[in-house]
Length: 204
Image (cartoon, rainbow, N blue to C red; front, side):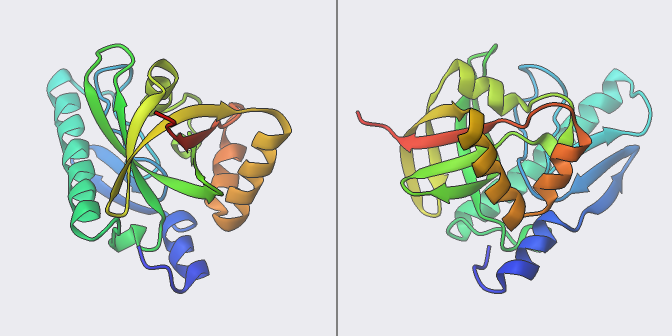
């Protein structure tokens, strides 16, 4: 996650999408969030690890695709922690945070890497899900359980998650889309208004 060569490094993570075929599953690798929250709603889907089924899968194959995505997510989480918050490969240069959420339905702990945008003392995350028509699972987790922890670099912080609405939301999303044009593309792909979540340090 190098800070130099801002434009090209970030565009590698956001603007340029790399696809890899795993069995009968296409995993689109670009920026955004990885999803490990498989059991709270739908199968795993995210910007960094969108699982797009080329055809309906049997239960066995669907379980295999979830396992493969979990492995992909886990590799990135381990790399993040081993390299002071940096992830290489197609995500080199992307500012990433690890969201520690609680499953909205299961109550189980989840870890979701996602891109963030610093905003003063706040960290902004964007529930883009690569332009899908549904919000990512971690969004529902934050709405249900807004008191969470995040990992930024080598720090672990307690934060409160609050969705941003109205003109402020539009201004913040436009800032993110200007820095990372892939987000503008995600918004064009869906009629869903991509949520912006502000993470502020807890006062406790």
